[in-house]
Length: 94
Picture 1: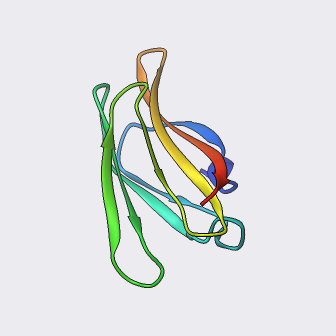
Picture 2: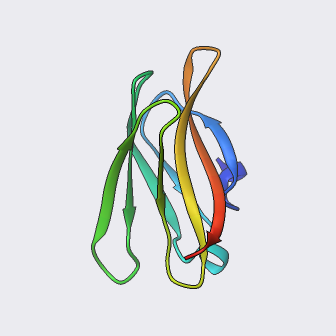
Picture 3: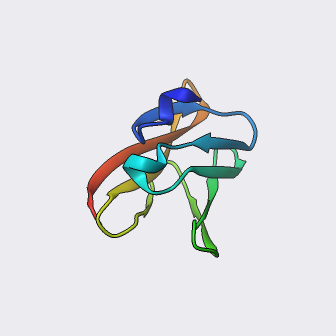
């Protein structure tokens, strides 16, 4: 899962997983995929200052999280050979 450290990856997942992120570059040290299936992906982000957010996306859908002055992390889901995959991409700073 090191491929996602920079916030840009496509990662096949078959079960929940914690995705480590570069906190110096992205502000957030990690995100967690809490559920994944061919129909949807649910992810959770814990804010370093406390609290957090949870969101669910379907195939081709998009969500995002960011911290002011850091790149936005866009979260999506796709199917690769019929298997669900997390998609992370960097957007413009928030």
